[in-house]
Image (cartoon, rainbow, N blue to C red; front, top):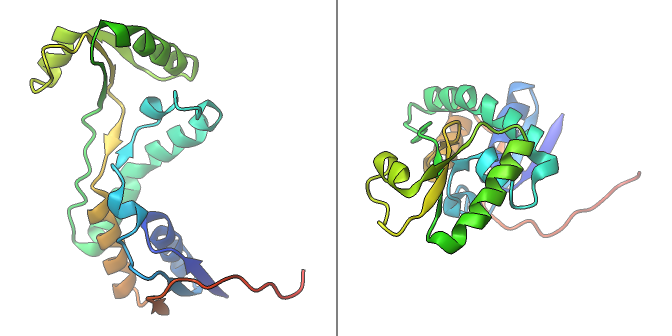
Length: 183
């Protein structure tokens, strides 16, 4: 099986790596491997923090993916002999002032409806967790299950692992289009 993967960020490189494991010959096309959207991403593996942004229907998929991530991260780190910056320190979503508290309560409600284990805490409790927070922070939602990675390290590690696994071809150009043959 011959497969072309367009894009060499975390998703494209992970896809290419999986396909190589299945025995596929893989060609990756990207003008700047590991330097696109993944390079600029925040690295949040945070389904509970993201659920409020209109992602409620995707929450079960996001939660399942987040649960799988530690194993994925360990595997990639081992294959590339690299530190991916993986942490499971959780997330604090903060209300900058009293006016933001209502939005924070709505976030907490959306998270609760999605089954997230989160807690609404006071500003002083948030500062005990994260001492660098402004004294103006009026409250926060504490999301202990959230994780993060350094997406630049993950992209570089995946690219390194694929190179070691002899990815068939890496074409450092922009894809020009898609040609369909037959249906």
